[in-house]
Length: 539
Image (cartoon, rainbow, N blue to C red; front, side, top):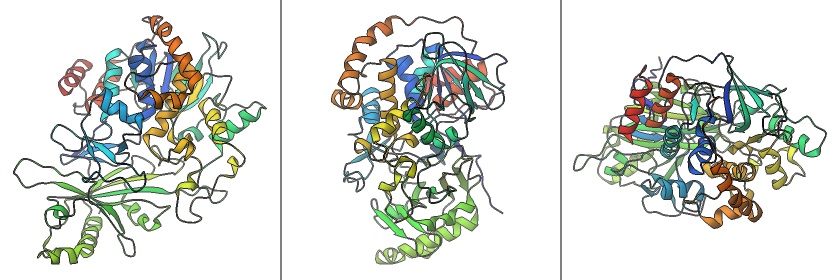
């Protein structure tokens, strides 16, 4: 039988299990942010904390899962922080690099020990580390923004999966106009403005009657609705076939590839036998403690995509729930032993050259799988931006979308940012970006952060963040928008006042958010006072 356990694993951005029920009355928000990925948490933080143009208690963040972070998914396994989702960035990616380095002043190191430029990006890439130099997880800045937002009074609601958005009465574009957000289980929220940080599959699952879909006759309305409902990238036929992003880490007691073979950097690949290997020696974290032997350590045995290497589908049967959480941690010998044998066979000559016997090397204690799928029912699907075909190398694996024939990148970006021009509803997510637009490839946090920053400037007149490179920001939002935002920002900040009409945020909601921001270390049932106290100790 497969032995899969989560007892010793916690999400670095995890949820404090607490009693929860939907409110009997609509949750009142001025701005509702739906989706707690990079762009979702960032937008709530920018509005309530960084630019401080909104009363924080009127900003609501809704998340379908039990934790923020989205596809930035850091997990703690045996004292190692493993990123099974997004994991690195370049300094020229000012969003998020300037936030990480200038604002939060987080420690970073080169992703590759030699600081060599990455072959794909032609630039040196970095990861976030803790005070001891260990991988801290790419979710660290997301968690830091959540902490600051909570401290200002932003309300965060977990297990709120959006099912539809409807007319809430009043002029939708005027003060007092509103949208009603409906969530699975019966929850309802009322908001004047809505910002969606949802992946493609979540948008496609919304009620077709939702007002996010503009049924008007204009070309722009038809384009926006088509993109949101019927424009799946890499669809080879009338029915979209799911593809997967695959990460596999073997957790060993000691890093034999470094200590015995001297392989601290570089890649390896062999897909002509099972289980296939497409790994990197420098990716997985290694625990180091002074003069003690290093370990445990994670060897990244696989990081690739089924679009590029269909052979890695071999790992899919070991996934706990392909459409659910992407994380599986297993001690199943049906995976551990073949994977270890394959790794030893691949490195047997290198072991022998250094006087070691590969057969004497003990197998890994467990394997961590991060499997991301584009399945229509996936809760956390694999990121796939539009026009993804320009970034795939296997012929025919990812055809261009016929629905975008004749559409320019700027038309696409404008249509997606405000899908219904008659509503204050906006959308920013990797999945709804144009691959390669302004030189930005799929599938980096920068894509969604650039999209949401542009929306925040144009729709909320937010000024440039003090920590963000000026030229980068001006090039992103445009000279006219930058000037208008600077003029409007001081007036907007001065107008912020406390709101007394928002329905209360329950103690279990607050405790869950505090635990999430602190890294999920609290015990089930802890109250908000304990949660916030623990949060203060952690930060």
